[in-house]
Amino acid sequence: MHPEKRLVFQYTTSSTSLQKKARRGITFKHWRELNIIKVRDGLVAEFLSEALSPKDFPDTTWHLDSDSLGDFKSYVNVAFWRDAKDFHEQVAHLYNDKLEMKSFEKYRRRRVVADSRDWRIGNFPLPKGDSPGVL
Image 1 (spheres, rainbow, N blue to C red):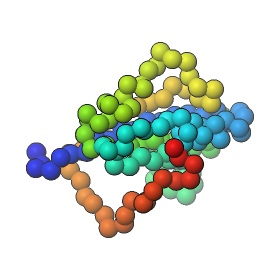
Image 2: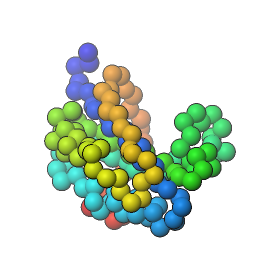
Image 3: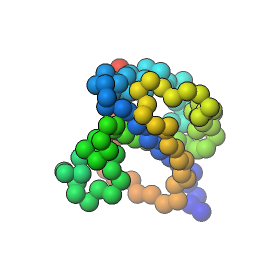
């Protein structure tokens, strides 16, 4: 056990149908404007990420790109939290698979929460603020 407090990581994949190009924009708008984290004291950082093509990264083994998947593309949301308590208070209660899927979703979101065991810190800093349009 490290004497420092360990971070909790949340990974969520969401799959957006490519049948209608407008759905991709809805995915980003939903994340930026509706998935709001009201109290960010325990949030270290959160990133909505788009999978890059395995053509550019041939050692990819988790294929989330539309070239590999066909009619949908997956996005990965990664959040770093101070601890599990902060994660539960801010977002865990929103995980409800009994609700209907969003109009842009092809499949149910897949989620996992992990506890950091060891870490290394780089010299490159995190961005200083939110990306444009994030509430």
